[in-house]
Image 1 (cartoon, helix red, strand yellow):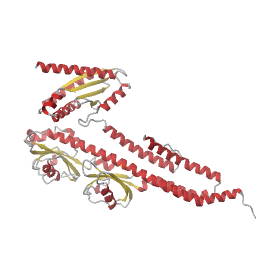
Image 2 (cartoon, helix red, strand yellow):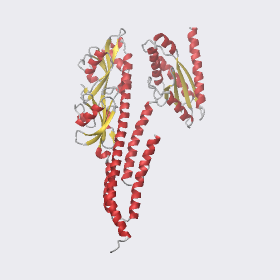
Image 3 (tube, one colour):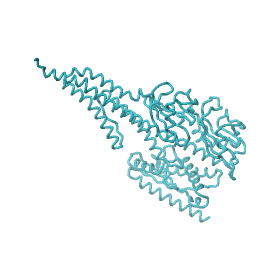
Image 4 (cartoon, one colour):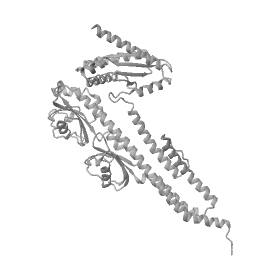
Length: 521
């Protein structure tokens, strides 16, 4: 009987492994990895959509809050004539930057008093048929409308934010409205240009399935969703984030993630084409299956080297991803295999970097004071530490305290105290440069950091503050603003903390002078 050589035995054994065990093992392994990869893609998309939805809620609340705050400053004199109304609107440039389709004053019957957009701002025009007018008049509460076609010549889809205006006896006498164009580069319109991966996209739709924003502009204001998206929408209507595979209007299989906004009954959705999302995994699967056939002709040692070469990067990728999950600290995975596994790693890194950027944006929002929109104490102290270690000196610190806030709270109520704080914030914003850090660091305390500013620049800033106080007090209102001020300058690293303390002492000395002046009166 002819003996079979060891080389042949190894060759036969390798071929048996390749054509029996290897296909089975490859199938099981790739199925597991494909499921895990798909779950990771869906989980990451859920995280991304949730964070963007939270951002949209924050921006909607900030924009609406600014409009409501402006409405509280409207007086009967502003509503007396269209000219007075128009002049009042021209004192609100900040609203004009938020609402790019115009700011408007309506009478309680829905007739226009004035607006910032000339072509539709003709006094007397009747807008009582608009949903936002009916809703605000009926409820007496602020409203964010559903999308509708603007009467302006561009005929773009827009939404309207409204805030009711009440008389002293509590009657609704007018409405302040701010309109946002869904086709412009505001925080809603720009959503259509945001991408998930290379070809994925975001869109917004209302509770009645009216499309608000979409990368395909012709879809805006169309009503109706693909059945798969409708099913996911129904599951996410309670506010949770829901994800699954669906077929979009173009017949393309996509990973769809839907989340309901908290501020308004709108749904944020993201479609990520499955062909792109799973491309790295599919490429890996093709490579493995194609490698089985020529693998039968290789020696055990060559196969061992090959398998070692193939599996080590994959194991490394898996371990690095697990390490990120266990520690909770993101870092790029390092894979230099030069094959599909590196493609998977690069795709993972790209997606995680985008999520990291969104997280940094949320961290930025967390550094703001909710009432005034100024920086909060945490950000202020972090900037102090950073600048104190830097080299750009001098740096000046200005401390500000709102005088008589407790008296206002005790006599007029906390709502009046809040308005006094907002007056102080407005006065400070009008006095400082855009690059200066202006923060609210306590209930009635504010502070500012003037990088690169010496004592003369600090003194000029104090003068600007006093001028801004005078301007605020020159406006009609039941409150008068008085601020105690103190400033100090640090000329070298390590001296900024002492400058802060000096500024604080000088601010209290100024407060004592203010009290003495009041008592002498």
